[in-house]
Amino acid sequence: MNESGHALNGPHFVVTPSGDIHGESTENNLDLVRRITACVNACEGITTEELESGIVEDMRRVIAEIVPVLQSQNTNQQTVRNKVVVHQDR
Image (cartoon, rainbow, N blue to C red; front, side, top):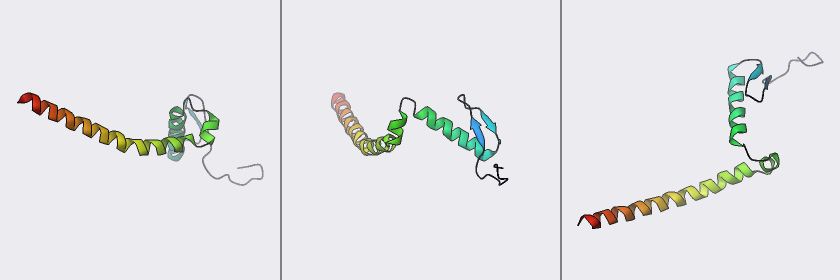
């Protein structure tokens, strides 16, 4: 409850720097703590300013664009290797 006696909505907990949870130990809270911990770990080395400016979305966009290119390149290299092996076996 808040100062005026009204029930507070949402999860109520504190996460320590080591990832421990203090407060209501519900399944939803544990899931949120797990997600927060994963996000903090994944963002190590990225500044708050970079996060606020949308660097994660930028990285996701670049990865989505480059993965098909790399997959195609890998397929082409494998095709060339297979042709070389066949040619050497003759």
